[in-house]
Image 1 (cartoon, each protein chain N blue to C red):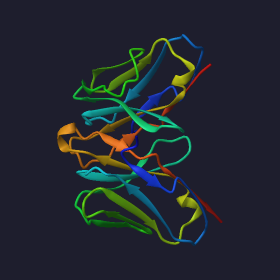
Image 2: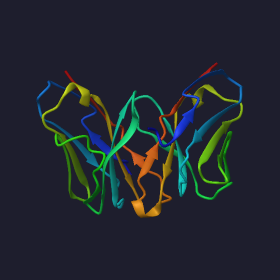
Image 3: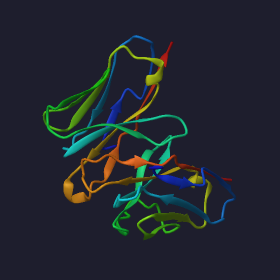
Image 4: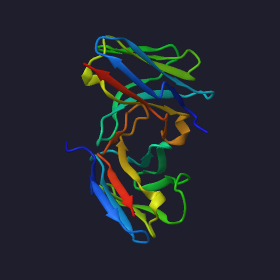
Length: 114
Length: 113
């Protein structure tokens, strides 16, 4: 298994531009999570899906952020318009059906908004 | 407000020393997990503890879940440079929340040869 695959690994964009982050979860995992990691705030849960349905998006900072999961093998996190304070490492993680299962994280996307 | 407080935040020790990292909360968790993260990578699961008072060992690492399921500790014996990394505890509040994890802010461990 290739694990959770995220793309791109690095993204540098100008303020105001749209940014799309992509994630392919592990096949058979029916939970998908999007986290953001910064030095100041650590790992913050943004949104999670179960069977492609968004369950909890209370961590999404504002309307500029949106996430979709059109099928079991693909999810996107979009920021429009991007701002410098969005600079962070964004992680996608997936998990199997049992709550005792651990998360499998991707390698992350390092986003820099200048 | 951090639901899970880890201490210390930074730890720099010599190879061969022992250390303990603490993860504390005022909330009860149904389970708690420990992860290790290396630079440029995502966190990797080390262990899951579920029962209050549970102790699990993974080679030189010993994990304990508090009796009241509000705290946990990670003890490393005879630390090695390969143990260097960011250690994160993560708790699951209740099973009816879909299993979402709340992470502590992490303990950055550096083991010098």
